[in-house]
Image 1 (cartoon, rainbow, N blue to C red):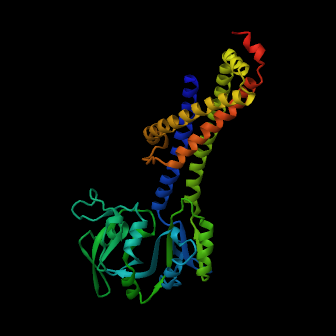
Image 2: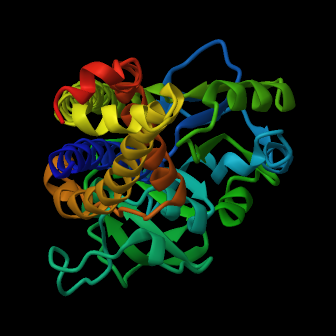
Image 3: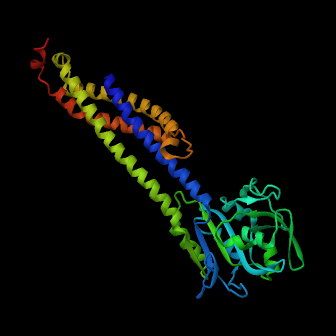
Length: 381
């Protein structure tokens, strides 16, 4: 019986460890990908694309683009799956002159944009431009402050704390975004309302980036719902991030499932062989039971009860040990910091699997014990 308990504990520990790590990986990877940025892009419908930012057409001469009304932001918040929308970041694009040099102006809501673009590294200290990097999500921006792309900052020879002029207005350079290899490198980022005023585009935006909490959300359904609310736009799902996350997690989940099945089969075999050995060793005991009036069902019940007790002990011990092992090995297996929660449903599942496997593997040994001939069994007394 001790050998049987140890076998059950090892099996349940393995299953709990793999399942818990897989579940934690799904949650953590989901959070990581949600932090990467937009996974949906809303742009105005257009027939031609010349110079562009994220697919939004920008004229090479005037940087004139089609616009979306600002009311679209509120409409996005009314879709059926609105609880899955994490960040909505509108943008207004236009060509302007900064200190008499051409630049792409990007009007944004700083709070939402910086929350979405958490991978940005922003130098905010002119004295130590390479050593000090602000965390975007923690920055508080004023309407009179701007961010410069690395190339534009070099072209203007401007550092954090200095001022730039757009028309007759002066703005303080709050920080310089380190090179991204994208349109932002040659851009100036302004508050959205300020950009709308400078570009004479009141209540208009050029594009909207949407970050959805997509651990479990139906991304295609959200795209369809937004498209229905905004028929004059194209709603594009940035599927690469979602699919990459899904592929990585699914591979590990399939591996964990395969290992769990093998462990369950081995565990069932261990229970079966142990219970059969127990029945063979207890022939005399069973014969005495039968000779003093125990029915076949009573003998079978004894065997199954023992199997159930052992399975319950194995399930509880396996869950506890599995959670400990998962907590200590998760960072090594997943190569990331994972939080391993103690969940009641996992404990219930581990206990259920243990009992089911133990009872199913004990059915045949119980049947063999029940049909044992009392006279044959008494020969061993």
